[in-house]
Amino acid sequence: MAELLTVHISRLCLFGYHGVMPQERVVGANFYVSVEAQVRVGESALVDDCLDGTVSYADIVSVLREEMSRPSQLLEHLAYRMAVRLKSDFPRIESVTVRVDKENPPCGVLAREIGVSLTI
Image (cartoon, rainbow, N blue to C red; front, top):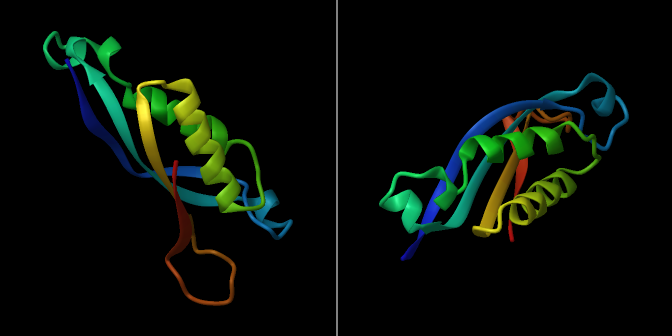
């Protein structure tokens, strides 16, 4: 028995150094990362209450932190790295959507956050 289940993480706040402008990669900013992962969950998790039948959200968070620590210019690139890494590290993940929002982006307008979403 295996069921498809959604593991979701909403607005994980991580600090990082991402942006097209050089100063953004020097001073850094807060980013909010949300993930929805479609996970093929096994009987050991559903019936036997055992972690090895699913994907630990703590392990997902660890991957997101690692990828956030690697500076990039584009949020598109960061979201792609995160999504690819999650699918690669956790074979139970069948598809994943990663959303990355940048707090108070420097684009000449008042915006709480601007970001991207990617599904693979």
